[in-house]
Image 1 (tube, rainbow, N blue to C red):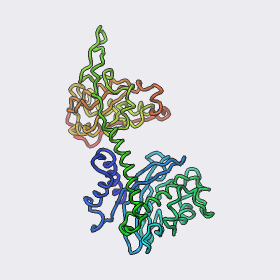
Image 2: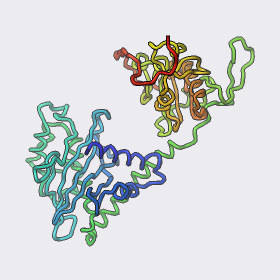
Image 3: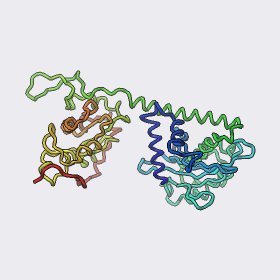
Image 4: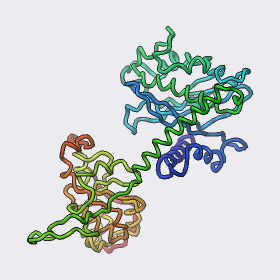
Length: 438
Protein backbone atom coordinates (compact mmCIF):
# COMPACT_ATOMS: atom_id res chain seq x y z
CA UNK A 1 0.00 0.00 0.00
CA UNK A 2 2.84 2.41 0.81
CA UNK A 3 4.37 1.95 -2.64
CA UNK A 4 0.96 2.50 -4.20
CA UNK A 5 0.45 5.62 -2.11
CA UNK A 6 3.82 7.04 -3.12
CA UNK A 7 2.98 6.39 -6.77
CA UNK A 8 -0.23 8.40 -6.42
CA UNK A 9 1.56 11.12 -4.48
CA UNK A 10 4.30 11.34 -7.10
CA UNK A 11 1.73 11.68 -9.88
CA UNK A 12 0.03 14.52 -8.03
CA UNK A 13 3.32 16.36 -7.58
CA UNK A 14 4.16 15.87 -11.24
CA UNK A 15 0.79 17.37 -12.13
CA UNK A 16 1.51 20.40 -9.97
CA UNK A 17 4.94 20.97 -11.50
CA UNK A 18 4.18 20.30 -15.15
CA UNK A 19 1.00 20.63 -17.15
CA UNK A 20 -1.09 22.39 -14.50
CA UNK A 21 1.58 24.35 -12.61
CA UNK A 22 0.08 27.61 -13.77
CA UNK A 23 -3.26 26.55 -12.27
CA UNK A 24 -2.20 24.58 -9.15
CA UNK A 25 0.25 25.81 -6.54
CA UNK A 26 1.99 23.52 -4.09
CA UNK A 27 -0.51 24.68 -1.45
CA UNK A 28 -3.33 23.67 -3.80
CA UNK A 29 -1.79 20.21 -4.17
CA UNK A 30 -1.51 19.82 -0.40
CA UNK A 31 -5.09 20.96 0.02
CA UNK A 32 -6.22 18.45 -2.61
CA UNK A 33 -4.33 15.64 -0.90
CA UNK A 34 -6.03 16.36 2.39
CA UNK A 35 -9.55 16.98 1.09
CA UNK A 36 -10.36 15.24 -2.17
CA UNK A 37 -8.29 12.24 -1.14
CA UNK A 38 -10.05 12.21 2.25
CA UNK A 39 -6.84 12.47 4.23
CA UNK A 40 -6.03 14.53 7.28
CA UNK A 41 -8.08 15.77 10.22
CA UNK A 42 -11.42 14.04 10.64
CA UNK A 43 -10.50 11.14 8.39
CA UNK A 44 -9.07 7.67 8.95
CA UNK A 45 -5.87 8.48 7.06
CA UNK A 46 -3.30 10.94 8.36
CA UNK A 47 -2.38 14.33 6.96
CA UNK A 48 0.11 14.39 4.11
CA UNK A 49 2.22 17.16 2.60
CA UNK A 50 4.71 17.99 -0.12
CA UNK A 51 7.52 20.17 1.26
CA UNK A 52 10.70 21.87 0.00
CA UNK A 53 13.92 19.97 0.60
CA UNK A 54 17.36 21.60 0.22
CA UNK A 55 19.30 18.76 -1.40
CA UNK A 56 23.10 19.00 -1.46
CA UNK A 57 25.41 17.05 -3.79
CA UNK A 58 29.05 15.96 -3.62
CA UNK A 59 30.56 19.33 -4.69
CA UNK A 60 28.22 20.87 -2.07
CA UNK A 61 25.95 22.59 -4.54
CA UNK A 62 22.35 22.95 -3.42
CA UNK A 63 19.12 22.32 -5.29
CA UNK A 64 15.55 22.76 -4.13
CA UNK A 65 13.82 19.41 -4.36
CA UNK A 66 10.48 18.15 -3.10
CA UNK A 67 10.24 15.84 -0.10
CA UNK A 68 7.05 14.03 0.87
CA UNK A 69 5.46 13.81 4.29
CA UNK A 70 3.03 10.90 3.85
CA UNK A 71 2.20 10.60 7.56
CA UNK A 72 1.62 13.02 10.44
CA UNK A 73 0.01 12.19 13.76
CA UNK A 74 -0.14 14.53 16.75
CA UNK A 75 0.27 12.84 20.13
CA UNK A 76 0.03 14.46 23.57
CA UNK A 77 3.47 16.06 23.61
CA UNK A 78 5.08 15.01 20.35
CA UNK A 79 4.27 14.52 16.65
CA UNK A 80 4.93 11.42 14.57
CA UNK A 81 6.09 11.92 10.98
CA UNK A 82 7.38 10.09 7.95
CA UNK A 83 9.51 12.02 5.45
CA UNK A 84 10.53 10.59 2.08
CA UNK A 85 13.43 12.15 0.21
CA UNK A 86 16.05 11.46 -2.46
CA UNK A 87 19.41 11.04 -0.79
CA UNK A 88 21.86 10.92 -3.68
CA UNK A 89 21.45 12.25 -7.23
CA UNK A 90 24.66 10.73 -8.54
CA UNK A 91 22.93 7.44 -9.35
CA UNK A 92 20.69 6.87 -12.37
CA UNK A 93 16.94 7.00 -11.85
CA UNK A 94 16.52 3.23 -12.13
CA UNK A 95 18.59 2.82 -8.94
CA UNK A 96 17.64 5.93 -7.02
CA UNK A 97 14.75 4.84 -4.81
CA UNK A 98 13.41 7.12 -2.09
CA UNK A 99 14.54 6.96 1.53
CA UNK A 100 11.79 7.24 4.14
CA UNK A 101 12.60 8.27 7.69
CA UNK A 102 10.26 7.80 10.66
CA UNK A 103 10.63 10.82 12.95
CA UNK A 104 9.12 11.92 16.25
CA UNK A 105 9.55 15.59 17.21
CA UNK A 106 8.52 16.93 20.60
CA UNK A 107 5.99 19.64 21.38
CA UNK A 108 7.98 21.44 24.12
CA UNK A 109 6.27 23.02 27.10
CA UNK A 110 7.87 26.35 26.15
CA UNK A 111 5.89 26.41 22.91
CA UNK A 112 9.06 27.36 21.06
CA UNK A 113 10.30 25.50 17.97
CA UNK A 114 13.90 26.02 19.10
CA UNK A 115 13.25 23.73 22.07
CA UNK A 116 11.65 20.94 20.06
CA UNK A 117 13.76 17.76 20.18
CA UNK A 118 14.29 14.77 17.92
CA UNK A 119 12.67 12.07 20.02
CA UNK A 120 13.00 9.26 17.46
CA UNK A 121 14.74 9.01 14.08
CA UNK A 122 14.65 5.70 12.23
CA UNK A 123 14.91 4.21 8.77
CA UNK A 124 13.17 1.04 9.90
CA UNK A 125 11.00 0.42 12.99
CA UNK A 126 8.96 3.08 14.73
CA UNK A 127 9.17 3.83 18.46
CA UNK A 128 6.83 0.93 19.35
CA UNK A 129 8.97 -1.58 17.51
CA UNK A 130 5.85 -3.01 15.86
CA UNK A 131 5.79 -1.05 12.60
CA UNK A 132 8.31 -0.45 9.83
CA UNK A 133 7.82 3.29 9.65
CA UNK A 134 11.00 3.93 7.66
CA UNK A 135 12.89 2.59 4.68
CA UNK A 136 16.61 2.87 3.89
CA UNK A 137 16.52 3.69 0.17
CA UNK A 138 20.24 4.39 -0.14
CA UNK A 139 22.98 2.00 -1.25
CA UNK A 140 23.89 -0.69 1.28
CA UNK A 141 26.81 -0.99 1.49
CA UNK A 142 28.00 2.31 -0.07
CA UNK A 143 29.94 1.68 -3.32
CA UNK A 144 32.96 3.55 -1.92
CA UNK A 145 33.22 1.33 1.15
CA UNK A 146 31.92 -2.21 0.62
CA UNK A 147 32.61 -3.18 4.24
CA UNK A 148 30.25 -0.49 5.50
CA UNK A 149 26.54 -1.07 5.87
CA UNK A 150 23.34 0.68 6.85
CA UNK A 151 23.73 -0.99 10.25
CA UNK A 152 26.85 1.11 10.84
CA UNK A 153 24.99 4.23 9.79
CA UNK A 154 22.33 3.30 12.30
CA UNK A 155 24.84 2.62 15.06
CA UNK A 156 27.32 5.46 14.54
CA UNK A 157 25.52 8.33 12.86
CA UNK A 158 21.79 8.37 13.58
CA UNK A 159 22.16 8.38 17.40
CA UNK A 160 23.84 11.77 17.15
CA UNK A 161 20.51 13.38 16.30
CA UNK A 162 18.45 11.81 19.09
CA UNK A 163 17.76 14.38 21.80
CA UNK A 164 19.04 17.28 19.71
CA UNK A 165 16.89 20.39 19.62
CA UNK A 166 16.14 22.44 16.56
CA UNK A 167 18.33 25.18 18.04
CA UNK A 168 21.27 22.76 17.93
CA UNK A 169 20.61 21.52 14.40
CA UNK A 170 19.42 24.60 12.53
CA UNK A 171 22.92 26.12 12.23
CA UNK A 172 24.45 23.02 10.62
CA UNK A 173 24.96 23.30 6.87
CA UNK A 174 26.77 19.99 6.37
CA UNK A 175 28.11 17.30 8.66
CA UNK A 176 31.48 19.11 8.54
CA UNK A 177 29.89 21.46 11.07
CA UNK A 178 29.30 18.64 13.55
CA UNK A 179 32.01 18.78 16.20
CA UNK A 180 31.55 15.46 17.93
CA UNK A 181 34.32 12.92 18.34
CA UNK A 182 31.80 10.08 18.25
CA UNK A 183 30.45 11.14 14.86
CA UNK A 184 32.72 9.10 12.56
CA UNK A 185 30.38 7.73 9.97
CA UNK A 186 31.93 9.40 6.93
CA UNK A 187 35.44 8.39 7.87
CA UNK A 188 34.62 4.89 6.74
CA UNK A 189 31.68 5.26 4.35
CA UNK A 190 32.85 8.10 2.13
CA UNK A 191 29.14 8.75 1.66
CA UNK A 192 29.07 12.46 2.46
CA UNK A 193 26.11 13.13 0.15
CA UNK A 194 23.97 10.57 1.96
CA UNK A 195 24.99 11.88 5.38
CA UNK A 196 24.49 15.53 4.45
CA UNK A 197 21.02 14.85 3.12
CA UNK A 198 19.99 13.00 6.24
CA UNK A 199 20.84 16.25 8.03
CA UNK A 200 18.85 18.18 5.42
CA UNK A 201 15.87 15.85 5.82
CA UNK A 202 15.83 16.48 9.58
CA UNK A 203 15.98 20.23 8.99
CA UNK A 204 13.15 19.97 6.44
CA UNK A 205 10.88 18.06 8.81
CA UNK A 206 11.60 20.62 11.56
CA UNK A 207 10.54 23.37 9.11
CA UNK A 208 7.30 21.51 8.49
CA UNK A 209 6.92 20.89 12.25
CA UNK A 210 7.02 24.68 12.79
CA UNK A 211 3.86 25.04 10.68
CA UNK A 212 1.83 23.13 13.30
CA UNK A 213 -0.68 25.31 15.14
CA UNK A 214 1.04 24.38 18.43
CA UNK A 215 3.75 26.94 17.57
CA UNK A 216 1.39 29.80 16.63
CA UNK A 217 2.69 31.96 19.49
CA UNK A 218 6.39 31.51 18.66
CA UNK A 219 7.89 34.34 16.57
CA UNK A 220 10.69 32.07 15.32
CA UNK A 221 8.20 29.47 14.14
CA UNK A 222 6.19 32.16 12.38
CA UNK A 223 9.37 33.39 10.66
CA UNK A 224 10.20 29.80 9.67
CA UNK A 225 6.77 29.48 8.10
CA UNK A 226 7.46 32.55 5.98
CA UNK A 227 10.81 31.10 4.90
CA UNK A 228 9.10 27.77 4.25
CA UNK A 229 6.55 29.49 1.99
CA UNK A 230 9.38 31.37 0.28
CA UNK A 231 11.12 28.11 -0.57
CA UNK A 232 7.88 26.74 -1.95
CA UNK A 233 7.51 29.84 -4.10
CA UNK A 234 11.06 29.36 -5.40
CA UNK A 235 10.33 25.76 -6.33
CA UNK A 236 7.05 26.75 -7.95
CA UNK A 237 8.76 29.54 -9.90
CA UNK A 238 11.26 27.04 -11.30
CA UNK A 239 8.41 24.70 -12.20
CA UNK A 240 6.50 27.51 -13.89
CA UNK A 241 9.60 28.48 -15.87
CA UNK A 242 10.01 24.87 -17.01
CA UNK A 243 6.37 24.71 -18.00
CA UNK A 244 6.62 28.01 -19.87
CA UNK A 245 9.52 26.55 -21.82
CA UNK A 246 7.66 23.33 -22.52
CA UNK A 247 4.51 25.14 -23.59
CA UNK A 248 6.13 27.78 -25.80
CA UNK A 249 4.82 27.62 -29.33
CA UNK A 250 6.31 24.96 -31.58
CA UNK A 251 6.73 25.68 -35.28
CA UNK A 252 4.39 23.87 -37.65
CA UNK A 253 5.89 20.50 -38.68
CA UNK A 254 6.52 21.65 -42.26
CA UNK A 255 8.67 24.68 -43.03
CA UNK A 256 6.92 26.22 -46.05
CA UNK A 257 9.93 28.43 -46.81
CA UNK A 258 11.91 25.36 -47.87
CA UNK A 259 12.04 23.64 -51.25
CA UNK A 260 12.86 20.09 -52.35
CA UNK A 261 13.14 17.92 -55.46
CA UNK A 262 9.88 16.03 -55.66
CA UNK A 263 11.45 13.61 -58.15
CA UNK A 264 15.10 12.97 -58.82
CA UNK A 265 14.73 13.95 -62.48
CA UNK A 266 13.02 17.28 -61.72
CA UNK A 267 14.95 20.35 -62.79
CA UNK A 268 13.10 22.71 -60.47
CA UNK A 269 12.50 22.40 -56.79
CA UNK A 270 9.02 22.22 -55.28
CA UNK A 271 7.91 24.40 -52.37
CA UNK A 272 7.27 22.45 -49.17
CA UNK A 273 3.60 22.40 -48.20
CA UNK A 274 1.67 21.08 -45.19
CA UNK A 275 1.30 17.33 -45.49
CA UNK A 276 4.82 16.82 -46.79
CA UNK A 277 6.25 14.19 -44.45
CA UNK A 278 9.87 14.12 -45.69
CA UNK A 279 12.77 15.27 -43.49
CA UNK A 280 13.87 17.89 -46.03
CA UNK A 281 10.76 19.96 -45.34
CA UNK A 282 10.77 19.51 -41.57
CA UNK A 283 10.76 22.61 -39.38
CA UNK A 284 12.61 20.69 -36.64
CA UNK A 285 15.92 19.13 -37.63
CA UNK A 286 19.56 18.81 -36.61
CA UNK A 287 19.98 22.58 -36.85
CA UNK A 288 17.48 23.39 -34.11
CA UNK A 289 16.38 20.17 -32.33
CA UNK A 290 18.24 21.06 -29.13
CA UNK A 291 16.01 24.03 -28.42
CA UNK A 292 12.98 21.72 -28.44
CA UNK A 293 14.31 18.95 -26.17
CA UNK A 294 13.10 18.27 -22.63
CA UNK A 295 9.52 19.33 -23.25
CA UNK A 296 6.61 17.77 -21.38
CA UNK A 297 4.31 18.19 -24.36
CA UNK A 298 6.44 16.14 -26.78
CA UNK A 299 6.87 12.37 -27.17
CA UNK A 300 10.40 11.67 -28.45
CA UNK A 301 10.42 8.43 -30.47
CA UNK A 302 13.11 6.54 -32.43
CA UNK A 303 11.49 4.02 -34.79
CA UNK A 304 14.58 2.00 -35.65
CA UNK A 305 14.90 -1.60 -34.45
CA UNK A 306 16.54 -2.21 -31.07
CA UNK A 307 19.78 -3.46 -32.62
CA UNK A 308 20.48 -0.12 -34.30
CA UNK A 309 19.05 1.88 -31.42
CA UNK A 310 21.39 0.15 -28.94
CA UNK A 311 24.45 1.05 -30.99
CA UNK A 312 23.75 4.79 -31.00
CA UNK A 313 20.75 6.95 -30.14
CA UNK A 314 19.80 10.33 -28.74
CA UNK A 315 19.22 10.26 -25.01
CA UNK A 316 15.63 10.07 -23.78
CA UNK A 317 14.24 8.93 -27.12
CA UNK A 318 11.96 5.91 -26.78
CA UNK A 319 12.52 3.01 -29.18
CA UNK A 320 9.38 1.79 -31.00
CA UNK A 321 10.51 -0.40 -33.93
CA UNK A 322 8.63 0.48 -37.12
CA UNK A 323 9.70 -2.46 -39.30
CA UNK A 324 9.41 -5.07 -36.58
CA UNK A 325 6.22 -4.00 -34.82
CA UNK A 326 4.28 -1.42 -36.80
CA UNK A 327 4.22 -2.27 -40.51
CA UNK A 328 4.90 -5.06 -42.97
CA UNK A 329 3.11 -5.06 -46.32
CA UNK A 330 2.29 -8.77 -45.90
CA UNK A 331 1.35 -8.74 -42.21
CA UNK A 332 -2.39 -8.93 -42.94
CA UNK A 333 -1.82 -12.02 -45.10
CA UNK A 334 0.79 -13.91 -43.08
CA UNK A 335 -0.02 -14.95 -39.49
CA UNK A 336 3.67 -15.47 -38.72
CA UNK A 337 4.27 -11.72 -38.98
CA UNK A 338 3.58 -9.75 -35.79
CA UNK A 339 3.16 -6.22 -37.16
CA UNK A 340 0.07 -4.11 -36.42
CA UNK A 341 -0.62 -3.20 -40.04
CA UNK A 342 -0.22 -4.60 -43.53
CA UNK A 343 -1.24 -3.33 -46.98
CA UNK A 344 0.34 0.00 -47.91
CA UNK A 345 1.44 2.97 -45.83
CA UNK A 346 -1.19 5.14 -47.54
CA UNK A 347 -3.91 2.56 -46.84
CA UNK A 348 -2.74 0.47 -43.87
CA UNK A 349 -4.83 -2.60 -43.05
CA UNK A 350 -5.21 -3.35 -39.33
CA UNK A 351 -4.03 -6.87 -38.53
CA UNK A 352 -5.68 -6.98 -35.11
CA UNK A 353 -8.86 -5.61 -33.60
CA UNK A 354 -6.64 -3.80 -31.10
CA UNK A 355 -4.17 -2.36 -33.68
CA UNK A 356 -5.41 1.23 -33.46
CA UNK A 357 -5.62 1.08 -29.66
CA UNK A 358 -2.01 -0.09 -29.42
CA UNK A 359 -0.91 2.51 -31.96
CA UNK A 360 -2.52 5.23 -29.84
CA UNK A 361 -0.72 3.93 -26.73
CA UNK A 362 2.63 4.00 -28.53
CA UNK A 363 2.12 7.32 -30.32
CA UNK A 364 0.00 9.45 -27.93
CA UNK A 365 -2.53 11.69 -29.64
CA UNK A 366 -2.50 14.22 -26.80
CA UNK A 367 1.13 15.16 -27.40
CA UNK A 368 3.32 16.48 -30.16
CA UNK A 369 5.42 13.65 -31.60
CA UNK A 370 9.04 13.92 -32.73
CA UNK A 371 9.96 10.92 -34.89
CA UNK A 372 13.41 9.86 -36.02
CA UNK A 373 14.97 6.80 -37.65
CA UNK A 374 18.28 6.38 -39.51
CA UNK A 375 17.78 8.70 -42.47
CA UNK A 376 14.19 9.93 -42.22
CA UNK A 377 12.60 7.54 -44.75
CA UNK A 378 10.95 5.23 -42.23
CA UNK A 379 9.53 8.24 -40.44
CA UNK A 380 7.98 9.40 -43.72
CA UNK A 381 6.13 6.07 -43.97
CA UNK A 382 5.23 6.08 -40.26
CA UNK A 383 3.65 9.49 -40.70
CA UNK A 384 1.59 8.22 -43.62
CA UNK A 385 0.22 5.46 -41.39
CA UNK A 386 -0.56 7.88 -38.58
CA UNK A 387 -2.30 10.19 -41.02
CA UNK A 388 -4.34 7.34 -42.48
CA UNK A 389 -5.40 6.20 -38.99
CA UNK A 390 -6.66 9.62 -37.93
CA UNK A 391 -3.77 11.40 -36.20
CA UNK A 392 -3.59 15.19 -36.20
CA UNK A 393 -0.55 15.64 -38.41
CA UNK A 394 -0.06 19.25 -37.32
CA UNK A 395 1.47 17.68 -34.19
CA UNK A 396 3.75 15.06 -35.81
CA UNK A 397 7.33 15.92 -36.85
CA UNK A 398 9.90 14.13 -38.99
CA UNK A 399 13.14 15.25 -37.36
CA UNK A 400 15.27 13.12 -39.67
CA UNK A 401 17.60 10.28 -38.82
CA UNK A 402 20.51 9.42 -36.57
CA UNK A 403 22.80 10.05 -39.54
CA UNK A 404 21.89 13.75 -39.35
CA UNK A 405 22.97 14.01 -35.70
CA UNK A 406 26.59 12.89 -36.00
CA UNK A 407 28.03 16.38 -35.51
CA UNK A 408 29.98 17.32 -32.34
CA UNK A 409 27.13 19.56 -31.17
CA UNK A 410 25.02 16.45 -30.43
CA UNK A 411 27.76 14.40 -28.82
CA UNK A 412 26.65 15.33 -25.30
CA UNK A 413 23.15 13.92 -25.82
CA UNK A 414 24.17 10.87 -27.85
CA UNK A 415 24.59 7.45 -26.26
CA UNK A 416 27.13 5.50 -28.25
CA UNK A 417 27.48 1.98 -26.85
CA UNK A 418 28.29 -0.45 -29.67
CA UNK A 419 29.32 -3.08 -27.15
CA UNK A 420 25.65 -3.62 -26.28
CA UNK A 421 24.13 -6.15 -28.67
CA UNK A 422 20.40 -6.78 -28.60
CA UNK A 423 18.77 -9.89 -30.05
CA UNK A 424 15.12 -8.95 -29.99
CA UNK A 425 12.14 -11.21 -30.58
CA UNK A 426 9.09 -9.19 -31.53
CA UNK A 427 5.50 -10.21 -31.10
CA UNK A 428 2.10 -9.57 -29.52
CA UNK A 429 0.10 -11.87 -27.29
CA UNK A 430 -3.61 -12.00 -26.56
CA UNK A 431 -4.70 -9.90 -29.54
CA UNK A 432 -7.67 -10.61 -31.78
CA UNK A 433 -6.53 -11.16 -35.34
CA UNK A 434 -9.02 -9.76 -37.84
CA UNK A 435 -7.06 -9.87 -41.09
CA UNK A 436 -7.24 -13.05 -43.16
CA UNK A 437 -4.11 -15.19 -43.02
CA UNK A 438 -2.73 -17.89 -45.26
